[in-house]
Length: 144
Length: 154
View (cartoon, each protein chain N blue to C red):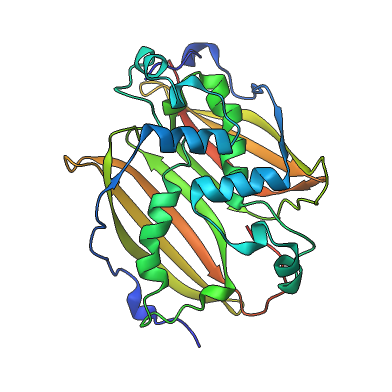
């Protein structure tokens, strides 16, 4: 494990570089295939509306995967993530057009946890269409 | 009908091994749009100290959720899967999943409870490699909603 960010150089309150991840219907079909999650709420508008959703929604696990990229891109080695958890609070609604939806992710070093293990807690915020789509999104990251 | 509370603490037998392939990891990384070379290039992964390409942090969910199917579909538990939404997800890693791993999952029902008319099920999936070493634990909260009001789906 070789994170590229040194624990000693990180301070509580530091912001990680934020990122925006586009999500189209094609993204969801591709994710369904790769993950094996073929729940029709993620690709079938008729079904999604029948069960009371405004439209097709992204897989929560896709949003979770997109959000942690802000941390793995920052740390350099994805294995630096030793713990990662989220709550799925609002769906990412994906319209059937060329632009789809956007997931905007920002992250902050919330605490330095352990000087010996060189771990920090990173708190993530993920938004789509102006709403927070993840709650309690936190990662524990082992730095160099 | 409320879930059978006596299921809390119940453990299911380990799954048959899932063999993690390089190309499956590549497919998953492409699906999440992540070009990190540690997921696709063995040399880049080795430069980071890994034996082979590693999987993105959430990759293992496909394996643990399939294993949780034993729990979800257990007719004695009485969960109505049509009403189930994914509430929370958390992973605690000992090491990253990597190509060549043969992973088994042991699912455990941590808690079963009712809250505001919803049935809440916490399932823990312990993932071990062929040597029996711990790789990652997945904590999955599933919520079976009383009414289908269409919110909070994930």
